[in-house]
Image 1: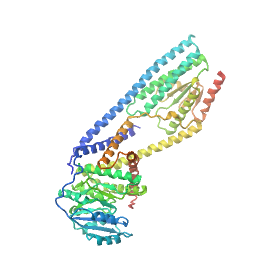
Image 2 (image 1 turned 30 degrees about the horizontal axis):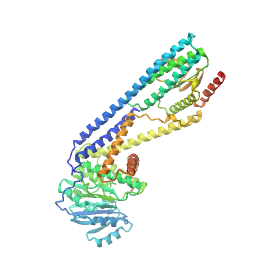
Image 3 (image 1 turned 180 degrees about the horizontal axis):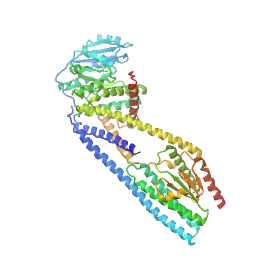
Length: 224
Length: 407
C-alpha cells in the first residue's frame, strides 16, 4: 500500500515549470542566435551593397566597363537571394520573437536599394541584364494568395536556375511599410502580388508568367 | 498563429506535468509498488459473474475462479442476463462440478442491473465482480482481500492483462493495459484510483449497499461506482503482485466500439458528478478535473488537427491549380528542408520522456521490451494508437447527444 503523498502535485508543478522554463529559454536562445546569424549576413550584404553602389558611381565616371559591373551586381543579388532563403527558413521556425521581422524589413530596404542601383546600371549599360522584382505580401493568411505567391516563387526559382547569369532577382515584401518602396511601387500602380520585368512588364496572374520567360529569351537572343 | 502557439505550449505543459507527476510517484514508491498486505482476517467472499451470451468463455472463467487459492469463497453467482445462447446450460452443468456455483437467471436488463441483483442475493462480507470473459490469477482474490483489513477501504483491484496478445493490434492493447495498470497503482499514492474495473474488483458489501449499488443507467458502471466511492471517501486499492487476464477486442471495429462505450460512460459520469467539480477532496479536485481536462484537450486537439488539415488541403489544392496554370513544377527539391523550432525540440523531449516512461512501465511489469519488434510496437502505440482517442471521444459525445446507448 502506498503512503499518501499529496504534496507531489506541487512538486510535479515545480519540476514541470523548471523543465518547461528551461525549454522556453533554450528556444529564445536558439532564435536569438539565428537572429544574430542573420545580422552577420546582413552586415556583409550591406558592405557588398555599398561596394556595388560605388562601382555604379565609377561607371558613371566612365572608369569601369559595363560587363564587370553587371557581373558584380548579379553576384551580389544572388547572395542576397540566398540570404533571403535562409531568413525565410528561420522565420518559418520562429515562435517567440519578432526580431526576424525587423531583419526582413532591413533586407527589403537593401533589396530596394539594389533595385534602384540596377535601374541605374541599365540606364548606362542597356539591356545587358534583366531585373525581376517580385513584390509579395509578408505573412498573409489568405490561402489562395499564399498559394499564388508560392507558385510565383517556384517559377522565379526555376527561371533563375535556367537563366541565372543574366537575371537579377529581387524579391521584396511590399506590405512592411517601407516608405521608399511604397513610393516606388506606386509609380508602377501595383497593389497586389506582382513580378516586374525590367520595369516595363508587370505580371499579376500565374497564367501570364510565360510572358516573363518569353521576354527574357527574346532579349537574350537579340543580345547574342 | 500566436493563439495556436499558446495552445501547443499548454498541451506540452500539461503532458510534461503528468509525466513528472507519475515519475515522482514512481520514485517515491518504487520499493513498495508490488507489496500487498498480509492476509489476517479471512473475509467471506461472494463472486458475481454477469454473463450475456458467453457460451464460449463462461466455463473457463468459472474454472479460473474455482482455482483460486483463497479459502473463504462462499459462492460464485453467475447472473445470466437473458442470454440467447447456451450460457445457462453450461453453467448448470458446471454446478455439478462446483457445488458453490449458483445461477441466477433473469431477463436482459444490462450489466449494472445484473450486478445489483447479484448483490441482493449474495451472502459474503465482500463481493467480487469478475467479467465473464476474464480470468483471475490463482492468488488474486486472496491478495485483494488483505486490503480490507483497513476499514476505510471500500474496493480493491489488480492489473488487467490481455489474454489474447498474438496479433499486432492485440499487442498494442496489451501495452496499454500494462501502462494503465501501473499508472493506476501510482495514483494510489494520491488516493486517486478512478476505476476498479470489471474484469476483477473486490468491494465491501456494506459499502455497495450504502452507495445503492451500481448505476444501471451508466455504460461504465465500474467507473461510476469508483467515483461514488471516492466521493464518499472510501479508499480504493490496487494490487500489482497479481493480475487478471481478459479477452481484448480482436478487430479494430470491436475495439473502437468498446472504447466508445468507455468514453460515453466517462462522459455520463462527468455529467452526473459535475456539481462536485473543484469541491470535496481528491475526487472534486483531481479525479473529476482530470477526466474533464482529458476530454476537453482531446476535443480541442482534434479540432485544431482538423483545422490544420483542412487549411493544408485547401492550400495544396490552390497551389496545384496555380502550378498547372503557370506550368511550374509541383514538387521541388528545395522544398525539402527542416528548420526545427522550439516547439519541435520540446515535442521531441516530451516524446522521449513518454517513451522512457512506457518502457519503464513495461520493464517493471515484466514485459520484454528491449527487442526491436517491441520498440516498434511502443512507437506505434505512442504515435498512432493513443492519437485515436480524440476521435473516439467525438463519436462518443455524438452518440450520447443522440441518446444512442447501444453497445
